[in-house]
Image (cartoon, rainbow, N blue to C red):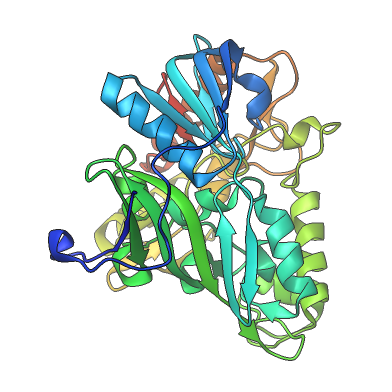
Length: 381
């Protein structure tokens, strides 16, 4: 029997065991297994070579079995959820690729537990149908529920860190299933404990605490969303209106998956918004004046004491990489400068070539080095 222990950031070995979360050490049925299996169809980019071995797990026990086997044999392991945040090299992956296809949507009052393999945008729709607020502005984001705490997924004024209460994960170092409370997840902008140590944790389930606001959304924080809804920031609107408005905004930017639209053959935002120290922002501002003239002010948003966040999309556009930029099979989206896309027939090297060109151009113009948001496998910028 594999027991689940409560997470304690300071004294993990002395943590108490949590009842009711036991996971059998072996699954009862063999998992689905393929060899020399293509990975491109499992990613939103439709890019990447084959995996030596591809396994699909539909229960937590199966996930743990495959992870334990790989760790015991020293086999490289690649975890795949919705494939919306992966850039896999053209040579593929020499090891075991594990597709986490677990299912589970459990709602108890305002408490929600999702299995890692649940489709995130479907889960958001179900919370809205249930009249619960807290993730309605995260509608349309591709991928699985298990990926949301890793990236601290956020958009349109909401982040999952504000509603996640705890994450149930398999700790590969300890060989145990742990419960990590929000305070120990080390959430920050597109970061978490799980992303900082990617070879240690396998997210199994995520728990959220939502809000029953009589069918109304959480206060609208994002200015673009408020304008589209015709309200002021801080106002609440019907949940369905908030979700539908966000979906329209995302669709207009090519950020909702559509097999027929190559603008959605992407990883969404390819680069994170840079967060600069005061000194760095002053130097950046000087470069903006030099490059664009005295009357141009770059986007600037508070990002904690002594830090300012600016817009990666703005940087890319002002550096000369406008919507639709490129002549090859990998190009910038025609709808949003922050999305790099596969126009059909692209290779991963085509995509990376475009990404490197953008990074170099922004660095030369503004002195800022953009950082890719998707995880790269077997390749790097």
